[in-house]
Image 1 (cartoon, rainbow, N blue to C red):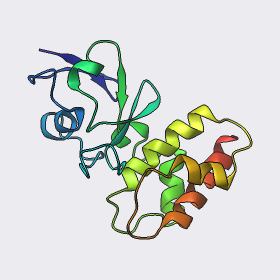
Image 2: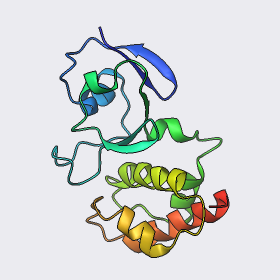
Image 3: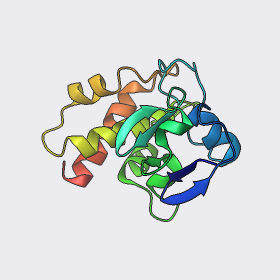
Length: 155
């Protein structure tokens, strides 16, 4: 059985290594942060971090992350008592409407903030989130939330 590390916990998963990671996260590990949207890596709803880099879990295979890779989902960023700066900023800016895209947006933004520690602009945030779709029209609030988190983290 493949062993994967998700949100800091090592778990053995009884699944074929060719199984898309999104199914393992949601069905086997009961992590509902990543959402299955298009299944073609085009919408971003399933975005997670793999070793700190944004990855579309609908296209990543279980076997690709078995072993030493670190997978982080929305549930692994923060806690209700101590939310990640992005989670707190999304709440403060009311950046979610239906909420389906929110997890993917936050995870994509987390990768951006980890990569860019200084001088982040709204244009760079918009470009980084360009392939994460939101049909509710909350993109301006999402960009404000990422900028807020960036300032709070000292980026």
